[in-house]
Image (tube, rainbow, N blue to C red; front, side, top):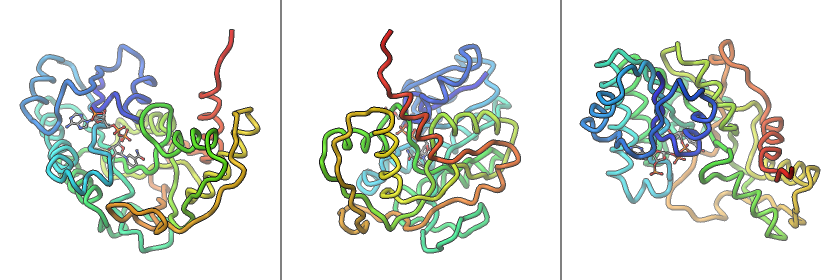
Length: 281
Ligand SMILES: NC(=O)c1ccc[n+]([C@@H]2O[C@H](COP(=O)([O-])OP(=O)(O)OC[C@H]3O[C@@H](n4cnc5c(N)ncnc54)[C@H](OP(=O)(O)O)[C@@H]3O)[C@@H](O)[C@H]2O)c1
């Protein structure tokens, strides 16, 4: 049986829909992963858990600067608690981490062996979390820029903006790889038997500006009521934010590729848009 923590979030809800009902125990916030007592009591009430996928996180990057204790408890202590309890019940833990563990100063695809040095507090807490899971022989999958139907994400916000704003400014000096939540969910299921550190994202490196242009074009083709006439490329410094983001954090995904299929983000983007189209019957 599979337990998905953070099952109401962007990734967790996608993973939950992918799994057959018989396979998983879903929880929203009934369990606080930063409290080991709460985790132990949950697994006691739900015997037979063989795999735990940790999609729970304090994921608000800017807020993590202000709410440091909460971010640390959820992103560092939480995965450690899950790793402990997984060990106690003989279950396997798959934990999700982030490209924000990288400093962002190398401009080439980054492997699992590349130096990590987070440039913000969120990245620091996530790095501690992944180290603790790996110390307990779990599996860590780093991912980046997730988009999907549920939850707060850049792509859903941008789709809204395209339908409400004549002009949009998007950064063109931060490079990464986008990840469609259902594709990552499929990859997670393929990785259930594995341990160690892996990186997964859809293929193709893009800035927000490049992504925005493709989204606009595809949305128009599919008949969305787009009113945006121009998308302007701007430097990241145009927008003030409480913390830095890595300028370059695109993964090299060669290590995971023998186990999972990876398609280009443009193909995934079309599926994302098709899933948003209204259905009349
Ligand atoms: N989104 C991205 O672009 C992105 C990029 C790279 C990596 N990641 C990683 O991918 C994973 C999934 O992210 P996501 O975007 O799906 O996050 P999300 O939408 O914010 O979902 C996180 C879920 O965790 C729950 N949660 C928070 N603190 C908890 C705690 N102490 N105990 C139990 N549950 C708790 C949240 O519940 P509440 O809503 O009630 O707080 C929420 O349902 C995270 O590990 C994140 O770091 C995300």
